[in-house]
Image 1 (cartoon, helix red, strand yellow):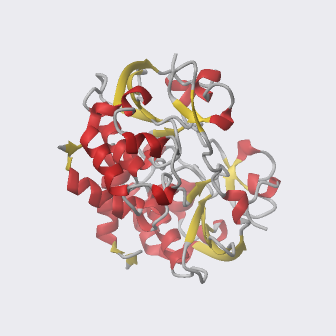
Image 2: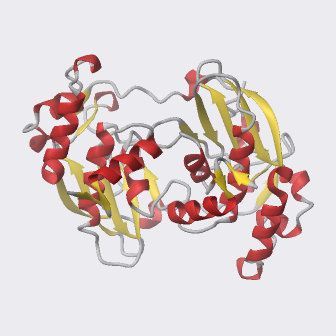
Image 3: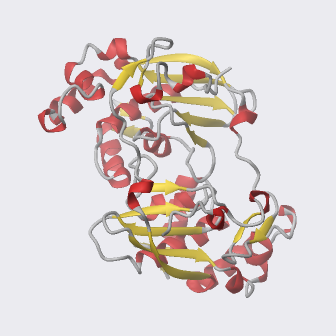
Length: 187
Length: 187
């Protein structure tokens, strides 16, 4: 059983190295991305949508050319365990999601996903085993039509120097950079 | 000259494989993260803040344990070319930024960063050469104090099944998932 172009063992190694641990969500995520890649829409270039910021974006970044930094991956805060890959030009794509109906067949994965057990009562080995056994069988796939312009990253536009901090920032943000407009995370 | 634990050549290879191309921003980003890592605050664990979604998050993801999916990397849309690494508990950290004053010493890098030339008139070789030559010398460093709770990812909380799409979502989002509340990116 392969995940993307990797063997299962290679994928586990990659996940541990990049993400820090073999999270169950990254194993399901590997199968989600794998299934989506195998059903890619026609077209030369595709972008990705990940419908949760938790775990799943790392599976997309490891298995596709789409990353946060290159702008080909958009992360939405919907809390749905789903990934869509779509052609940049036509917007035609495929969406793969964790299917609750199918998940019912794997008790440990079900109770993990719906948080029915305290973490310390979870059986990690059984959980990962069930996910590995299920592979694509807890997932469903649907065609989607995306509106690519609505997801495009805004052009940076002209660059200005902030009169408050002296750093460069996009002039369209206003007379000062956002950090100096009170949004700074620093005390 | 190393970037993180990699040789320059290894880093270039890694960037091409993960990000897709050797973007000038990822080369500067490599030096930014490298300088921040060398001045890490005391403490066992650190989180990262990246002040722009463009390019720079990938340098953080490649060179630190912090990724989008594991939640240790926060991306802010300030459009400032800066990264902060800070201790999760104390909030003490270090911020490294591209210093406009210092950048003046490298003409091709200056005109690239401030968009003074159309892309086709840029000299890529000269640009990357200047960035490589500059290394840490176009950067500055400052101590920062972060308020960690304000940046913590909200707990997912109880999971519900959306009556509209049938998929699992965080119950705190409301009676339906956000996708079914009109925020869907699909037509």
